[in-house]
Length: 348
Image: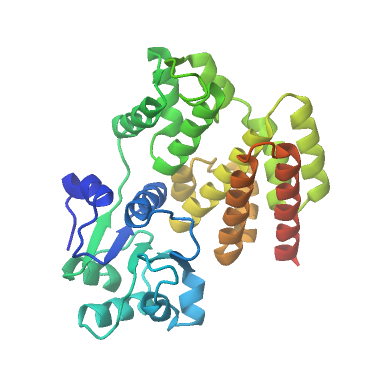
């Protein structure tokens, strides 16, 4: 079925039991990813549980066309519900073939499936099958207005008893407009900067214009680029030196980690949207000149499984730094070296 825009939030928060396959698609890659995460949290207790969640990439089902069927028919090892997450850049004959068999009752399914795809046109076979299916739902993800993104920011900040001052709101809107996933990253940095409601003892907090300039992409980005860019280009020596300078200048290791995660997301968003200047704009990176050329170099090194692995390494590092007493500086430093070595390997 085709989910109407007014029903999307309700579907993500309370997925209908009769629907087993969810296709998220559209030109707004950040929103596709964000809604995929929301849906995953609604479908399984822990979206990061490897026993409950299987992750597949486009390369996985290209190299093994039966991989999706195998993942969907596998029984749960723990007795609970299972989820399969499939990430695509566009239409997929293998995924469409499985979905056609599933709707016809010829493909067993012991799990629910969330597909995150690129901008599928109306003639796309996968999109057509999901929109016309009885046990599948198609959810289109198009660019949101500035008001929609600010409402999203207010929601996340409100959960931590934080509000945006009027002048901060005016500065913040252009930084986050057009990409839900990048917006979440910037909002989480502000929450980390101010502290969670629990860390503040429940006291309300107000985010000022100065906070935005200090914490978000407009402030401190150049210093963080001196760490993140060499790592993603395969220069561990420069990345390590930049990291040492960043720490000496007062930047936090967590800030460096967030910058790396943001750049990984930008590479993914740009690639999903086609990699042209318009795609770079949607990813929130420069479209022309040396900065754009640098980003394209990074994008050529980080594709497919390699990019997925980089995201997993960053996620594992984030989990590690949240543990009490964790050596945060060392964890992030080791992550940067591993990323740089991965880029070195890709360049050979």
